[in-house]
Length: 133
Image (cartoon, rainbow, N blue to C red; front, side):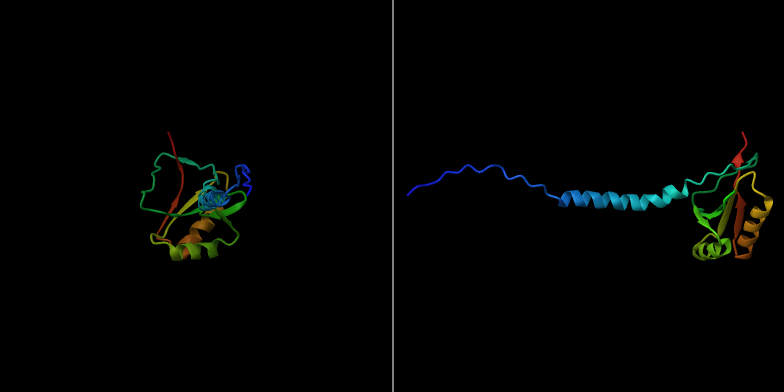
């Protein structure tokens, strides 16, 4: 009887499961972080005031941002400000609204936002300004 001694080479396989797991975790992280990044990208040139004060950490206001392209509610562009405020104020515990308007925006747009927020039951309404140094 002959015994054949054949040397076997190393078996090289790539295990794809850990790679897929890492890719899915990274995808989930990006999905969670994206809304925060989008919300913080709207930059407005706020007017300055000597009596500016900051909000407390407990207050999470509904932010209405007004620039030349229109209205944003909590960082999301909206064509129907009233509808968006109804949804947000219905879910809000504090009913606080903060309006961030660029300095060169007409007063009419800011007054419209103030009026609609007050009509829909906002408890506190404020206008954001930069502290004057």
